[in-house]
Structures are given as structure tokens and as C-alpha cells.
Length: 176
Image: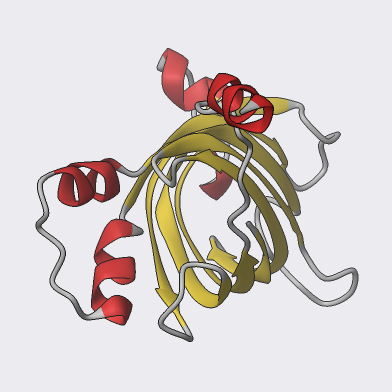
């Protein structure tokens, strides 16, 4: 999955890019980069880099128990509910990049444009970020120490077969 959009946080928006890899549309890793405009923005922090784990608990459970609704857009939207947790490295005003590592926890949803799993979507990811000072109970210096964020992005999801599960099966059928 790749997406680009805008993240709204304390004092202003930042442009954002997102890359995700998932296994069986259920669990995976993500990386997100955000950068504030160069001139005239008070976005805090100026830049942020986050990476972590994503879990989509509804897809596999609904698919395995046959609880799909039969409406592709709605099924894909429900299955896209994601729990996210990871590390965030921010650049507050007047500090160097990554000077304030912290923790990020959030939720995500993706609404597909078409009734297929592969293709474009509108993504919405939001949550909270804590800096190292906020996690350790130290003094808070500004809005980037403990802040909510919301990302709105347009992206593309592409499914592909990794043949990890059926690798041995393919060899056996090829020899017959």
C-alpha cells in the first residue's frame, strides 16, 4: 500500500507519505513521513517519521466465519479497520530531527473507490503521539510532546501472491 496526503496536528498541516506491507490483509508494518511546508507554517512538529506494526483483526475473523455482507465496498471498509502502534521521531521547532523519539498509537480506516481489494482508496488514520518527555513524566515543552494527529490520504493497494503458504504444493503439481 502506498498513499500520499495531509496530516493535521498541532498548529498546522503537514504533507505526508505512507508505505505499508501486510500479510493476508491482516498484519503488517508501516512507515510514515510527514513534512511541514517550508515557509509560513507553524506546524509542530516540523517533521515526523513513524514506523510500527499494524493489525487488522476483522478481515480474517469475518472471512473464516463467513460473516461477509456481500456488499464489496462495505465489506472492504469494515475489514480495513486497523490498530497501529509504533515509534515516532519528530523535529520540534528549534531542535534537530529525531531529537524527541516517542510512541504513536492509532486507528485507521480505508474506503475503496471500486469494489475490489486492489485499487485506489481514501484513507483516514488518526491517533495520539507521546514524546520521550511525556512518556517519562518529565516537563512538557510544547504541543509535540503529547498531541493528536489525523491523516487524510489517497492511496493504492495492490494484492499479490507471495506463494509462501503453498510453495511446496506448486512443486508437486508441476511434476505430475
